[in-house]
Length: 445
Image 1 (tube, rainbow, N blue to C red):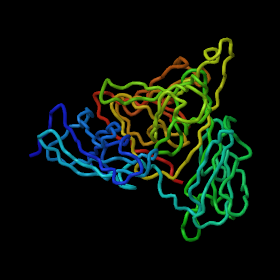
Image 2: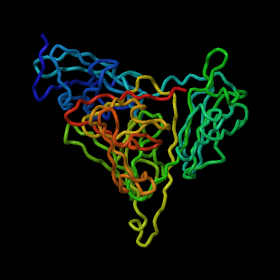
Image 3: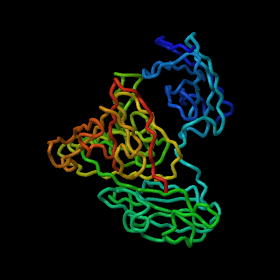
Image 4: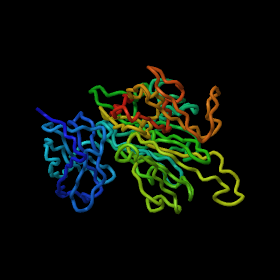
């Protein structure tokens, strides 16, 4: 009969073979799963050293109770910021000895995770959107059976910035287009928008001749015209702290790609460190040191993960230069992939605080986004300034959190549980409850 293992430590350790990977093994992440491919991520290890040796204590996850004789899996997840290499899951069985040795081998395309997008196999593929240093917004794409392309552009309702493919003939605002292009063209710069102009647009690049009612459709053979919708949204920030998320589909994104040159010297980004157990969580921060668009212009690097929330601190004008007036509303532009999500995407939630955001530019309650709230779970909403505070009662302060708690089957302050475009929130799981995975409910266009 299998017996629980109650030691304070249970180690999984081993060597990692680089096996011709273009980048070293250091900096990669080893993960232990309760089962594969559907099991929870029991323990996510820190990036290991250049020695190629890893060691994880799976008891660092205080919710995990390993059982001898049970089979678990260890793997190296892909990290798109490095390359496409990972290590496929290797099963191991826990013993009463308190440790297992499991060696791993990197392979191209191997390993779980790191992929949040489904196949990009439309007649037009490889569609991307970028924010240039000049402020221009540029689209790029490739042909995969089509010859020429046109672009349909949808402007979002400025009250929500939300994307929808089924209102106003496939746009949540006026639909413009098609923008016609030269034969074989693979790049286009939008003449009507730029970084920081306060406007939100969504784009579909489809073969020439496709009517706007069909831009999310397929040809006669069932091949999609394009799997990807691209987006550009502007978020309005205030002086002080602003709680945000990257509202697009990306497994990971670094600070230079996320921000570019949009913030000033002294502005800060704060992310949340989940820690190694209860009582070990806390904020980490990086400060913009000099002007520029690479990681060395920040005091510390960070790669934001799918569905991760973060604070941006906008330094008040007088703190930058004495007698400088207020900076007022600061527009921050994010660009990215709107849709084409892989299936079964999950984000592990731990007991205590999880800083999250919805990685798609639509509005959802936490329930509709795929959370399964339990009694006494909480959602913490941040009010950056008085203009964003709903009318009382109750009275609420700017630059402060308001908390909504699940009581029975209802949230006591329902306005707090809406996940809006680009907004981050804390999701709190009580310490006497169990952690679980957030299985995201995402739009399928």
